[in-house]
Length: 117
Image 1: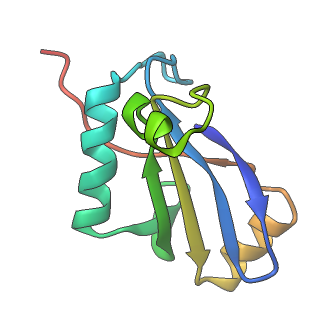
Image 2: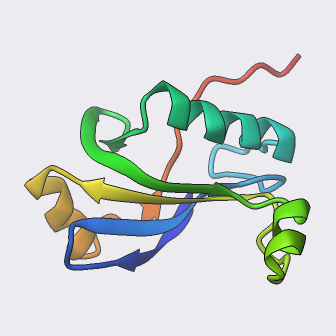
């Protein structure tokens, strides 16, 4: 999970959805190549955001950027965020938006299934 960095008055929320090589709250880690593929597949497959892994389609992806060394070099920006996945969502559900806006929801959390083989 990663902290929400920006919330605006247009029902939009932005931040890092995940980071490679960091141990999450379940004790799992993901390598950069796998996370990059997962980020791209999320965009291609659906791009909808859920709420607490139970309610689905409460937000739509409006921005996605997986940070790589090559991209930071091309953009001429610092590489401190290499291996992280930046996202932006337009929240379409009023109840979910209120929870984001009042700070009840402070982080993004990606869901997924992984193989340890």
